[in-house]
Length: 269
Image 1 (cartoon, rainbow, N blue to C red):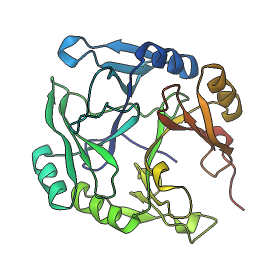
Image 2 (image 1 turned 90 degrees about the horizontal axis):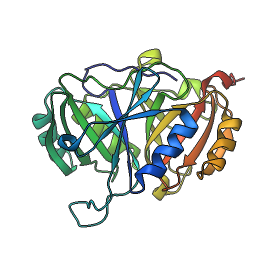
Image 3 (image 1 turned 180 degrees about the vertical axis):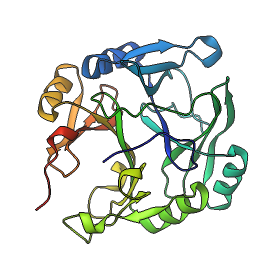
């Protein structure tokens, strides 16, 4: 399980978390991962950069009082961004392939431009056209992003969409999985893979499907204990895998993410 940050269309670029009780959210993630938060000021709606030591992790935003285009409060959740080469053209292509634009192109200072669409399966995904900021720093260290995946009940539809809109090169992992009936592909082969796409049919309920963010930890069991101390919840796991010991977590506001202790990987066989 590895990932890279590049400016190639379709590769993972960024993550951020939205929160309504921003102070409590900061306390939770600082306590769990040791992150620091750098507020960018009013020009950027008080958006925060998250750092893990010297490495960029992603961003965080206080969404108190903010609403979606339909008028509902913006949910507390983690968002995934994929790199695009030409944002306007990719947005047009996304619409042509069944997506709904949730947030139109927006200039983020000199860093780049972003937008958000709801893909045909109902999963939100952000687009990032980089300028001065390529994206997060992949260090592979605890506290950094280590993987991203879309779990969906509409696998074929999602495969077609991400291939057409993001130039995804989807490669099957069936040969490395214990159960070859479970369909899982990665964007790129082996160590060049930047994210995964899995068939969630029979694996999880539809409401639990969507994009998932994996964050590295030193040891899964001790991280789970820390989550409880900090007011978060364990939703499932920890479970062993060839990629690390993994658990699904909800932060105190309900934003979900996965933790992965890559050093605790259990080889198959």
